[in-house]
Each structure stands twice: as C-alpha cells, then as structure tokens.
Image 1 (cartoon, rainbow, N blue to C red):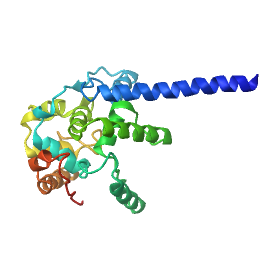
Image 2: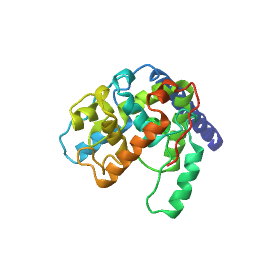
Image 3: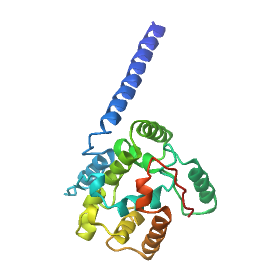
Image 4: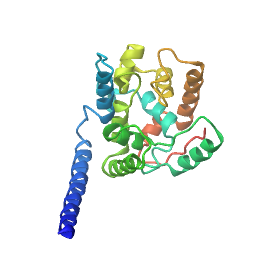
Length: 244
C-alpha cells in the first residue's frame, strides 16, 4: 500500500513537472511576438506597495525597439553585458572575473547577462537560492533558444527597473528627462544605464559623484563598441568586448 501511494505521488509529481515545462515553453514562445504587459518584478513591486499601505501606480509604457534611441540600446549593452552578441545566455568569462573580484573586494560585482536579467525580471523573484538560480538558468536557456538577440534586448529595455515603481526606458525617459525613449541623447542614455546596478539606491534625477563617473565610463564604452555599428551587426558579426 505504501509503495502504491509513493508511486501515485511520484506520477503526480512527474505530471506537475512536465506541465510546468510545457506551460513555461508555451509562455516564452508566445513572448517571442507578444509584448508582456506585466512581469514578476512588477507584481512584486505592487504587492510590496500594498503591504506598506502605499498608494502608487506602476510607471510602465511599452516602446518597440524602433522607438528606443540607439544610444539607449548600446548604453545598456556597454554597461551590463558587453559580450551580449557573442554568448548564448551566460558569460562564463565575466563570471570568472566576478568571482575573483568578489574574493578581494567588499563591493560585490555581478555577472548576469542581459538574457539572464530578462529571465529574472519576467518570471522570477529576487534572491540567491539554488532553486531560483536553477530556474533562472532554465528560462535563460529557453529564451536564448527561442528569441533573437534583438527581441531579448527589446524586452529587457521595456521591463528593466529604472527607479521606484518605474519599469522600462520609455517610462524612465518621461520621468527623468520629460522626453521619449526615442529622443534620448547619448548622455541621458548613459546616465540611465549608469544606475542599473541598483535603481533603488541610485538616481538619475540626483546622480551622485559615483553615478556621474560611471556615466562617463559608459559613454566611453559606447564609443569603443561602435554605437550604432554594433547594433547593425547584432547577431550577424562577432563583436569584441571592451574590458573594464
């Protein structure tokens, strides 16, 4: 009887796992064309506001890649993932560098690619548990297999958190610069990219000395990468990354 019950539970567990994989594959496949209007991180932000009895509205507005300044596109690549066009979701060289850096520095450095951040923003929650990391790796792999690099970049630019209750570069552009994402200047784009390590701590409205120095670093990396030339060759020609 006990064996029979274990067998039944095992079959049920297997069905749940298979259902999860099939459902997740379908959702990621649909997002190849359908723009996600809400993400896991947006839901968590809203729930946190409700818990704190804070009346707020999420700032988010979708903008297609053609309506986002090329400067903004290259700025996030320069700031977050300079090997974006070369890797298949994971930058193992950057991971190795981050491990070495974190062993000798109190200021921790991450090594998440843009693809990993898209997976996290869309489907997961903050944290460093093995389960979350495993799911992040799974969704990253599926996204890289099903989407083009341009689609990954487009979804990232529309779902990344860029301030309190502010998601996506269109909403951030209007909030900080009173303009659209399409009209962002190189300096404005670099400033938005500069706050990405921690948009809760850093501000594009009142940038600290550190953020200003990071902004100028991003501008230099944009020039090294080739700015619009990099974007034209995205997914076609290998690009050489620029060291920090």
